[in-house]
Image 1 (cartoon, rainbow, N blue to C red):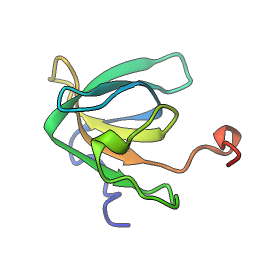
Image 2 (image 1 turned 120 degrees about the horizontal axis):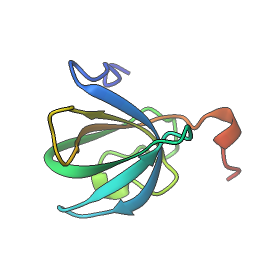
Image 3 (image 1 turned 135 degrees about the vertical axis):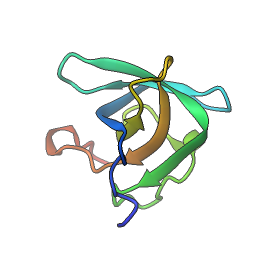
Image 4 (image 1 turned 90 degrees about the horizontal axis):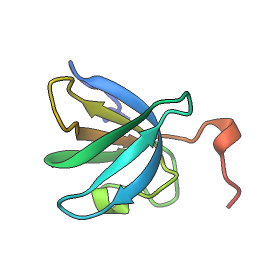
Amino acid sequence: GPAFAGCEGMREFTGLVQNMKKGKKGGFLVDNRQGDKVKFIRDDSSAVTDESGGAKPKADWDELANGDYVSVCWKMTDNPRKAYKVTVMPAPKEEAADE
């Protein structure tokens, strides 16, 4: 869908969600499976979209879960890094879990 427009001038980091924390002061780690793990925090403007094609599309931060495959839009200038846009993606084939 059109929500998958990319990160408009921001950086993009893609991988698996770990250490998911819900709520206003939420945050998570993203592991790109190539040796990099980046921590992001929730921002008031954080938006969640779901392009995974799952049965129950996620539209809210608190619906994110460990193991979700996500792409995060963030800015180099932020410290700590804020997740402005989180897009849930279809899991890579080798990562697809049986349900």
